Length: 469
Ligand SMILES: Cc1cc2nc3c(=O)[nH]c(=O)nc-3n(C[C@H](O)[C@H](O)[C@H](O)COP(=O)(O)O)c2cc1C
Ligand SMILES: [Mn+2]
Image (cartoon, rainbow, N blue to C red):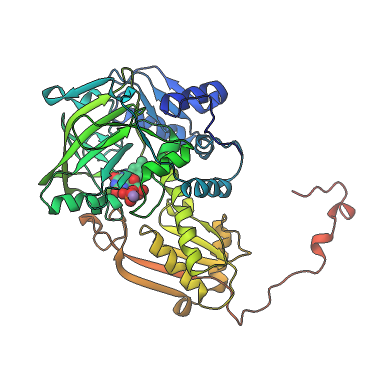
């Protein structure tokens, strides 16, 4: 397992693409034909996905923009692994490596200048529509920036917070933002709002995938995702001061939109095709005014395809470490945690424990709910159950659960406002019912069937030419 700290390539988006071109060219597809940012870009990525292909796609010629578009960066597990400089290992090893790097954050360094400020546009010259911003799904309310790393600073603690929050384009200098009740950022922008002050937000577009992994790592409010991103890159991020707002941004990003919220102002935002595979409802959401656009001379614009592999995998894998660490507090014998694809990498959590005393499984489930507000179903199984297999987990539920005793529910709890099964999905309610399932064997569980000596038999001794699968 090798890190990326001494890689020969620059730790930015350009450098990562150069690395793939040189060492993993099968990972990239370039499309030179002109494409429409409305439905054609998303259509192409969707068709590739239906064919089981998840390459990085570079659209060199998007109608209406001079800037190339980098799409589908985080859609394949292999590419996420390469982002950390790993060439082998499964999800378990990847998550373990993320955990080590998250525990070893690296503080950024402030530098005087950087490529992201080669071109600076302010005032009346600002036109965000110069970027190849796409419309993705049929009923989407408009064009959306979907892979902006939005940086805010907690006004009480001075700690930076970074996450991706979709931005609808309202006008050439006006954006929307949808910050779910589950995000730290929701607490931060509201602190400014309550004081009647604009909240400065820098939207960072285009960077190395390890920076995305770090910024989306599940972490407590008092940890700074820019430091975690440095940990993932295994070197400090270099930051430059923004031109118009009191924040510092990665000097080697591609594009930065320097914004402020307009306190008290709201505009209708969405519908927008969201991660559960349904449309997020229209809400009256905050408004961001763009104060400056800074960028490289030849920038790349990066997007994410929400509701598809690109979006689901990136935020899905990242939450496992934090959940596992929290569950360990309640249940020291936790063996493994999985956030399966079947729950769109959000809603389901499987936990395998060595069940020492009865009741511990429910403690583990409660701890998982504490760790991640997106979780809706937590299933706890014995350590011999393969939690990478939905079938094996269902088997444990089928044979080891008595509903009245082993299932508990927490109605009216905080969950995702995009949950299509919330108390009021059309109204964007974040109130959901949590379900914990103890699918471990209980004390009076009958003996399980087995044939003595079967494993030691060599079937080729009985059936000529037999080969085990
Ligand atoms: C492609 C992509 C799009 C996302 N869009 C949103 C969004 O529109 N609103 C939101 O609240 N979270 C969104 N998320 C999830 C947050 O970015 C994620 O939960 C993040 O860790 C929140 O950080 P915070 O809790 O530090 O604010 C998105 C994630 C990805 C990968
Ligand atoms: Mn955070």
